Image (tube, rainbow, N blue to C red):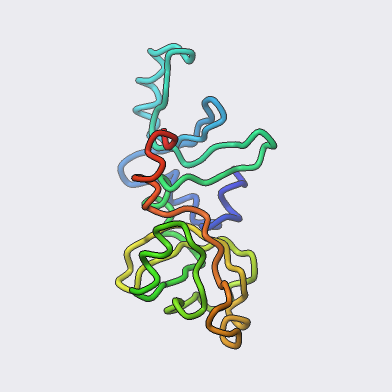
Length: 169
């Protein structure tokens, strides 16, 4: 599925499908994309599609305009393979987890050669994945912008588990 490749992990998507513990796949069900082992998928075929609420881990959903929106439930699977990463300073973590963009003053590090509008995984300085974002500035631009400039647009964060738990399934 190409809609994952450009967002965050590139060719590393193969590592999600062919895993040491079995083969995994992506399945579309009610506008949502699920990540599931083939073994569990075979078991799920015993349940009729109209009765099936969800199966596997929801990676995201398609909007009414057919754009793919990545869900925070995919973070633990995508973060280890992300090509582009941003680390936020401890003082910026809480702000990001409340749904705010990352400012230059809160930027700890950024992956070299990150382009503007590139999808990124946002980490704490202690390498804990916090969420997803989109680079508002390239790596080069981040070096020379003022401290109050937005460098990462917030897309999703682990605080959503609390703020939006009813819409994550």
